[in-house]
Image (cartoon, rainbow, N blue to C red):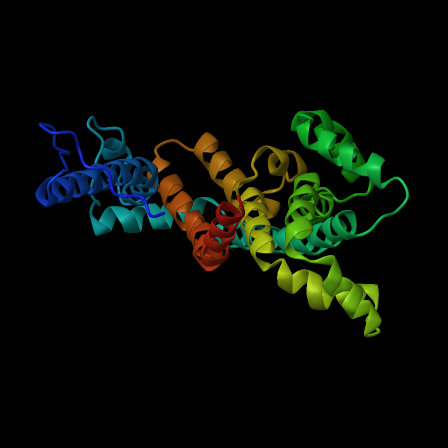
Length: 299
């Protein structure tokens, strides 16, 4: 028997918010949201903006209070440019940073994806021992393995080459863990079984199925690896001690220590060094955002 709608008791009425009230509340909510977004955008974007501004300033104006918020004269920019390229082999240092970051990222993506695929989709002996060992190695402080690594690289005569900057990153524990977790949910076992029935070998399955279905995870790992390799200072300073072998962070730090009044040129070097990182982020940002959205939907 259908239920009759309940009427409010006599003398009482249900007060509903008016359309104007709801519209005003929605507009105020958006205003507050945009205000918060703009506030955090300024906080995160200002350091990048400030680096480019200081690249056009001289020593005196950089340390003024309040700090400059707009670009300086073009003559000062040219002076900083000449100082930067006269004091250090900037082209060579940029080439070193770019080459190391590209090779370290490429090898890390390939081998970490391969190892993550194995941990996620295969059962093999000692798997349950090796994976916790990888997790433990992520938690170890970095300085613990700096000296043994330096001794090993010196014994191999790899100091002042790209090899100590690239080879140890191949089996990056964080990269293996990240890819194993991503591949676990992105690559279905049924698809792998179907590929084996069709006669595909395991390595071809990895190349034809594992890598394409892991694009979003690879984009995240690639961005993290590129930025980490590009910004690495302490490890690069230990492994590289010749001016021609320096990367950008080491070369700029040495220049700042050796010379006075070159902070404008150093900031110009930092500004130029930001360009590859921003380019990499823009290139991979679509994949990173889609990966985050997919994760939030699954969650």
